[in-house]
Image (tube, rainbow over all chains, first blue to last red; front, side):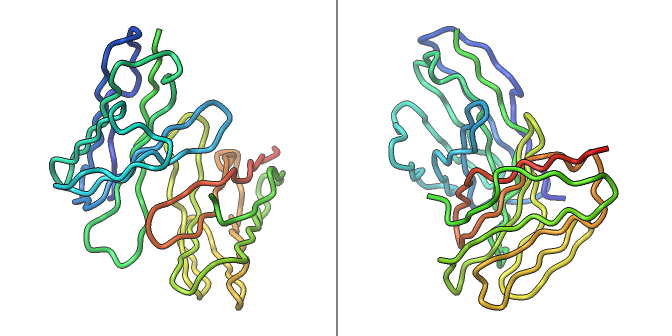
Length: 117
Length: 107
């Protein structure tokens, strides 16, 4: 149980284009989903928190107009990197928190590696 | 900022118990202690969590001191597949990762 998937697992795009990454909770409903990014040899950095049906909350320093997050249902959240540039190349990881749990453990997707050329 | 302090790296012989320490001296009363690990180029994997009492599951044991200011994750019989970065996290809502401990299992 508690499986989270991401699609695509890797993507290469040209500078200036937009890329959408999907995050799905496969066997549970997630009230809250989180998006992280990770640069090589660094830890995960939280980008934003999204609750189903409401606007995402972005961490300080993360541009909300560049990283569009939509949490349309209890099993799907999407991250769109708009007008991507090479410095946006990173490993993007989502996580989901299970509905109606008494604690806050999160289950992570396998990650999406974005390369912007 | 992460609220925990972990050693940057540790070695453990295969088959032995791996004991990973974590300091969280500023933990508040309603905050849980979570442990995750990340194997290279994969998403983090949940291991275990606890509030006050020691916890055990099929993967590991979590020992939390009585004052809750530190904890130890124990992998009872480490294998090569346990080589990963282990993150100790304290929180009651969103999970903020620190730098973790890079655990090397030696054959």
